[in-house]
Length: 185
Image (tube, rainbow, N blue to C red; front, top):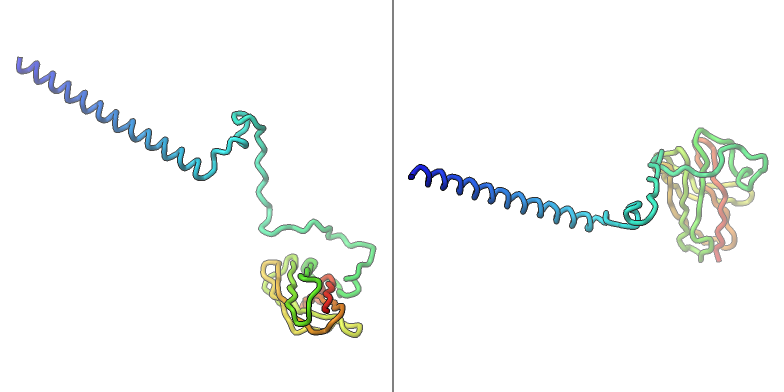
């Protein structure tokens, strides 16, 4: 009989160990489920409006990844037969693309900061000269703009009142930007 009790005790011990292991596995499963649910909510991945047919809406196709690191201007690179205001101000094209210049603000007080920003397609690590149109010619204004990965930014201040025309100029390619107008009063 002692052998029967020993076998029975061993069976009880094995069952006890199996139930404990099953309990531990259930607890681990519940913790994984709760952790996953919390992370999904925290990361905002539970948005039902974009979940397709289950959420009741249409699934949107994924957007294509960009094909380049820099935005490509939508402006056509083909030459135009019509002359523009900047054609008379800019010499022949160089190896690089167009220089686009923007200004802010367009009206300022004397010696108030005027920001010049823009893009120079295909250019990097070079200096552009800021020029002002004076007495029928472009002259250097004494300010440079450094081009980094196709973009540049600088500022000017002037005490000359009235309408002032500015551009940026690449001395290497002899290419000028579009002409911008700022009114100082």
